[in-house]
Image (cartoon, rainbow, N blue to C red; front, top):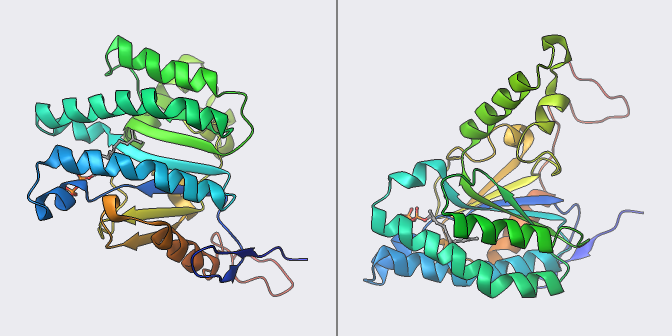
Length: 251
Ligand code: FPP
C-alpha cells in the first residue's frame, strides 16, 4: 500500500515525500534592503527563521535536511558582513544545540573548518559530537562549503590514500565527499527566486529535483515548504531512464 502524508497547511495528501531536502537560503540581503535595514539585520532575521523551518521539515518526517549557510565564495563579502555571519553561527550553536539534541536531531557539518577560529571550530565539533548518536532527522549545516572545493578535497584524499585508478568509481568517490554518510538530495529548494545552484552539492545534485520560490528566506514559511513538497510529489523522476511501463530500459 502506498503511504500518503497529509500536509498540515493545505490538508492535501501527497506521495512521495523527499527523503533528503536541501535548501539554499537566499534573499536575506534583499529582505533587509526592503525594510531599510543593514544586511546583517537580514541575516539575523534569516537565522530566526531557521528554527521554524527545521521544525516544520522535521514534522513532515523528512530524514535529512541540509541548509546552505555560508559558501566558500561568501568570504569575498565585506569583512563586517562575514564577521557578523560567523558571530551569528556561534550564537546559533550556543542557543539551539540543546533543543535540537532534545528533539533527537543529529547535527552534521559539511565544508571546511580550517577557516574558522579555533573557538568556533570547537563549538561546531562539540555540537556534532553531542548529537552523533541521535536517531531522528539529520540536520547538515553547509558552512564554508563549496561543491568544487569538496570535489578537490575528495581528489586530494583519494590521491593521498593511493587508490588505484581502476578502483575509482562513483560509489567510491561519493565516500570521499563531505556527504559520505548522507544520501543525495531528492529536492533542492532555493528561496529568493534565482535559478542557479551556486556551487551547492554540485556532484550530489545530478538527479535532484529543483524548486525555486520568490519568497525571501526570512519570509519563508511552512506553506512555502509544503508547496515545494507538493510540486516534488508531482515530478516524474527517471534518473536518465524512461518511464517504467513494466519493463525497465535505460537506452
Ligand atoms: C544569502 O542571502 C544568505 C547567506 C549568505 C547567509 C545565510 C545565513 C543564515 C540564514 C544564517 C546562518 C544560518 C545557519 C544555519 C548557521 P544573501 O545575503 O545572498 O541575500 P541577497 O541575495 O538578497 O543579497
